Image 1: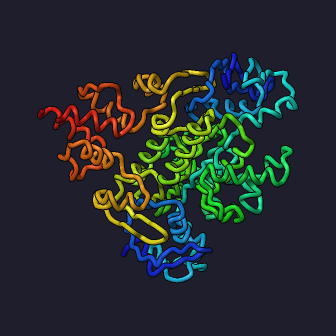
Image 2 (image 1 turned 120 degrees about the vertical axis):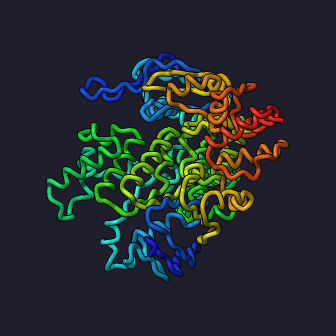
Image 3 (image 1 turned 90 degrees about the vertical axis):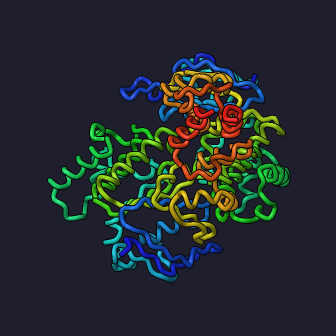
Length: 276
Length: 283
């Protein structure tokens, strides 16, 4: 059974319409959702989290249908990291903030302390436990937000443009950290992003446009369709862009190559160079 | 000469235990008609720096010359009124600053408030809306019905309606999709080239620096660590890595090949240049 199953889902608001969508997402996968602003990415995430209600169709998460009755149980399995690190702090210091999500969950004080420490340790922020959130960098704040989510042991983590306010180094570190945590704790990631280079290692990419799924598959399948991606107003991953530019300059040997990884591409180019 | 900082320091909460020096003895010039990128990490002093440009903050030491206006620690706020006509700042997430009933009223608000008649202000608003690519038919709509990218353009038009010569942009591209980013950057470029505006853009994105800026200013923990042309700035990858500033994507890729032994005829800063140089080597 898929972890998330979406059937004939529609949601309308003013002149925006999402769906009808049908989608199955498996456990332990990294699923990237890309698309232009207003394509329905965040709406879809909110529907899964039960923050908004669909007009028709169903979503089930882990066998539970998303409805008024189940919404709290479902939400306890889903953590969301938002775009702006400054909008998600509630605690006076880092450890209070991480503990906040554990309150009202009938968890013993002892267990709470243990989980807060473990979670801060996991994101590399243990030494900041007593710090005031306002003194942290954007990347550190996002790490604390992730620690707060890890503490509730979620099955699904939704990244809603979670890296867009960070500098390039901060972005890379955060994505690497989440990949590492995913391997360790086995949760599913749904990542909404405009940075296509952040998605090339995903298990699955979903491209939304005007509320509909236009492309879906593993990154190699989806991103090899360069023309369709550009027609949808999206960027190409850096390595695809390079292949295209090499072709335009008269070097066609790599045009159909499937590599999306920069390091692999460097190796291939170096090999070509050495064979000259 | 558009802007000159002379030994400018700024200390928050001076004389208290929370004292924090955000700018430390900064001397730098930003030339008229330049397109300058201001880069640096969180906490490097970028925000403090730009708030000095229209008098939101005054230096605690040193002085700033902006066109004919000299700003010193003693300058009275009243004397800074005129500065707000000379320097327009588009802050982060500027779409959140819209508040009027219609797009037109929102853009016309500032000039009306600064003494223009209703019809003059509206005329100005129409011109500026056109300049940033807002369709006439949107002018009577509520700004809150627009997309994020359109709302940001309305906010920009509102700033342009003050007719500043200097435009300061604080991370103006965050959250925009690729098409929105390209369109917005094209507008900034037009303002720079056609309207001859001096532009200072705060950004984390080195690809944007490489594609659009001609000068770069870099801050680190309140100190100036670079003020030079874009070409000079990107000429020393080692130095950039040391300061965690990073490189444009294409340059980063080129450096990986360089480490294997590839020699570049000037480090490529964008994918076109990278492909061009690669093909000459591989053919």
